[in-house]
Each structure stands twice: as structure tokens, then as C-alpha cells.
Image 1 (cartoon, one colour):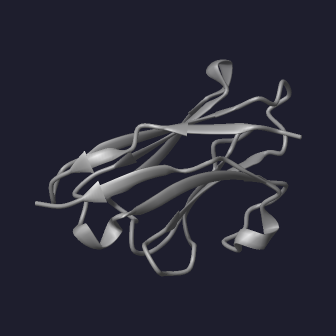
Image 2 (cartoon, helix red, strand yellow; image 1 turned 180 degrees about the vertical axis):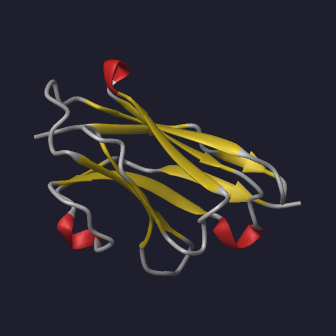
Length: 122
């Protein structure tokens, strides 16, 4: 079973930036897709973005397009989520997860990290 570990969460002010990281235990960088989801307090988990290890192809939720950027370092087995211009509504626990193909549906992801808290508040 692949293990994922997120880091980088914290408390920031509106408009600030934050960089999240997710390290996978998979030696073969499999499954190919690494996704990020977030779950605001009292709400459902929602898709944020996804990237593939092989090609670096990305997919973003409309709400974050242009502000969030995914990248990966295959040698470090790490995916990064750069989040800019954060809004208080984006306060949530952010999770990374793996899937065999691109999907915005949480149930399609087979392994999950423990999550990292992001709080946006003045």
C-alpha cells in the first residue's frame, strides 16, 4: 500500500501564498496520478488539482485555475502545490491522493495522506 505524507500547511493571511508538498512511498511512482483535494469545515471533500508523474500533465478545478500550480520532482518522489492569493473560503484540510487515471472524483483515488491544515485568516 502506497503511503503519502503531506506537509506545508499553516496559518496565512488572505492574499498570501503557501506551498504544500506530498511525498509518496512508491518506488515506481505508481499509480501515475497524484491529486489534491480539500475539505473545508463541515463540507464535502472537493477536488483541487491533479498531475501525472510521467508526463506532468495537470488538471485544475476552475476555482483555483490561475492561482494554484502543481509541479513534481520525480527524483524526490514529491508533488508540490503552490497556492497563491489564498482566500479565507479556502481554509480546509488539504489531502493528496493517488489514482490510476485522471479523475475529479474522490472515490477514484485509492491511497490518501493524513492531510495538512491550511487556515486563511486575518
